[in-house]
Every structure is written in structure tokens, then in C-alpha cells.
Image (cartoon, rainbow, N blue to C red; front, top):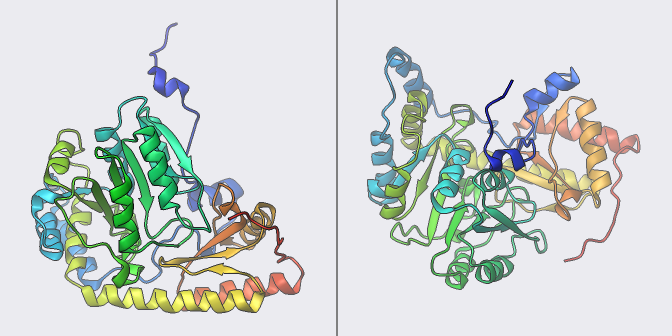
Length: 376
């Protein structure tokens, strides 16, 4: 009996999941997770205004959500002082990354990113037939000069940059980003993933110029706004870019709860400021913990902190040891970043428990940093 044939592209791809979810880890291991510190979710809840708006929306659950995301886009336009035509809304940044790749990448088109950066972007590039070129990090930062050089050499269609960065938490300021834009080919688009932008130093942020066709900025309600479960993000770009997205985007892809919750959360800047302050405090707690344990760490502009274990083997061992104790963290997957462990800033009680577990491991001799030099 003959079977339907997959496309040649799909046939050529390996079975890939960008992230194994903590829920899947619980199912496969049969062990519950008691400290969920690996997915960079917010430990500080959602705005009371957003909660109320989403609860009220249940009365309209039988209706389709607005495919134009009109009221949310209007609010975002007000916040950022851009036109609604400069805004696209999607079901999280992951959805928008796929939309960008689909719109700009032909099969065989070169695309540039950093080796070890956010893997979902790579997943979409492979899925649409692009050719991914990876540039190593330099001193745990995205190497902007090397990214620009690779883009010019390859005449890349896209350059992907997470700033602040996932998985390291490092960041580049506005001047460096402007220099990157000037070094790129004229027809190259920078995909600037700003998922953690609320946690970055405000003075380092690149000013928004929605008319700049060289750039699309992607932001989310999953982190500081605490709405990861409803999946909603947005992009700011030139009007012609947004218009092109409308030709292929999933128009009913953003649900009603996400739309009304996101709009209400934008009306509660004091709540977001409180989350940012709590994350600042939590990062300082992790820095102190690293000092107590004798572990180097990376200063972060995100809601997580990376501890340096010195080698892939030491980092991997600690991830497994912690999971055996019900603590879920992650580590980057590519060298030299795979010597790091990445820990989400949790609530004060959860941070205290994480510190207790780490000190217990240290006292038992189970927390050993393998000091293997890493080339810059």
C-alpha cells in the first residue's frame, strides 16, 4: 500500500524539538519537579488588571478573537509612539520567528546567527529550507563584528540577535547595535529578539525607529508580564514588512485571553516595574550565592543568571544531580557556553531553597567546578 509522501525538505530534516519541556521531563522520569528554574518563566505572577480582563473574557469564549488584534495594536502604538501599521502580533516570539523566516528566506538562502543562541530560530530556518551559518560567541557575548562579517561574506538574508541574550544574559548597548546595522548588506534584515528587554538597563536600549527597514524588533508578554501560558508577542518593523506578514500569517492565531490580558497588562506599568525590581533583587541573591560557593557567574540583563562550572561535563553533571533532587535548570547546548548552568530568578522562598540545595551539594563534595580554560 502506498503512503502519502512528505516533501523532500521534511524528509531531509532530523526529528527535532528545540526545547524538551519540564512537563515532558517529569513524564519521562516519573519524578515531580519542585523547583522549576529552567524555563525563565516569571515567578511574580500576572498584573491584577490582566487577570481581571482575562476572567471577564470567558463570557465571550464562544466568539472568535479579533484576527487584526486591533485594540492591542492600538495600545502598543500608543506606548511606543509608532503607527499601528508598524506592529504585528503573534502567539509568542516563537511564532513570529517562523513568520519572519517564512517571509524572507527562500530555500537555500543564507542566514546568520550565533553558535549556541536561541534554538527555535534555527528550527524555523531549517524548516523553511534556509542555510544556517553560526558565529561563535566571544567572551560570552554575541560577536557583533563576526556576525556582520559573516553576513557580508554570505550576503545573508537575515541576522538573528537576541539582546539581552539567551542563554548567557549578556547584552550590547545602543551604539554597538547601530554599528552592527551599518556593517550589514543593504538587503539584510536584523531580527532583534528583545524578549528580556524590560530587564535591561534603560540607558542601553536602542531607540525605536519603526521606519528602519533593516530591523524588526520582537518582544513578548511571556517574561516581565508573566503571561507565558497564553502565548503572545509582537513585532515592531517598517510598514512594508508588516504588510508582507499579513499575506501569510495565521490571522486567528492569537486567542482572546491573550489579547485582552496583554492590553490590560500594558495599562499596569507599576506592576511591571515591581517585577523588574524583584528580578533585580533576585539576580543579586544569585550573585551572592555564586560568591559563597566559589563559582564564577555572568552579570545578566535578563530574569536568569548563568553560573560557570568550567566544563561541559561539570555543568551536565550538576543539571542531572539537581534534577534528581527535583530542581529543574538548563544549560546551553553548544561550546564554549555548555560549561554554564542557567537558573531562572525565582521567588525569594524558591531562591532560598535553591541556595540550600546548592550548599548541601557543596558540603557533600558534589558541587565541583572543573576549571578548564576557555578560549576567548
